[in-house]
Image 1 (tube, rainbow, N blue to C red):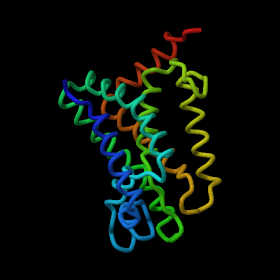
Image 2: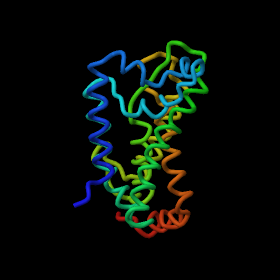
Image 3: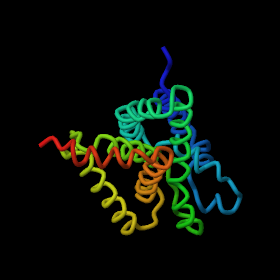
Length: 209
């Protein structure tokens, strides 16, 4: 039985988060810190920060979301693009979504020594939005709304919060949530444009109520 890419990512993220939580020097060396990145070129942080978390509660929430939706989206990629190719594309989509989610905050905070962020939330946001694209009327448990409504509310909330948020290190990186969600969704549509037609068909003809 082939181990899913999603479960491998979860395992690696849990391991790296655990190691960093017990080693402050390692944590500081790998976190997304735009001020430092702009001065020493440590752009690897755009990726490494996606495998760190601030505490075990933060880690659990992101990995629970990834487990719930990641395996579904990975299976979707396999169905759309074939076995090995689909799995590789899914992995690349996940990794590039982590990076893409950090670029806007780099631009915004590269002269702010007080801002830093960590977490897989940008990538998991992208995963959830891809799920919403192909299952628009599937009900979410929390909040109890259809996926398409959740997607609209999530993007609106993240956009509003990113505009309202003050530059404080350790705060919630709403910019990463917003841009990670949009990038994950956008790259999937770019890879398979016919998903737009599928979404519209599901939206119109799949209405369950």
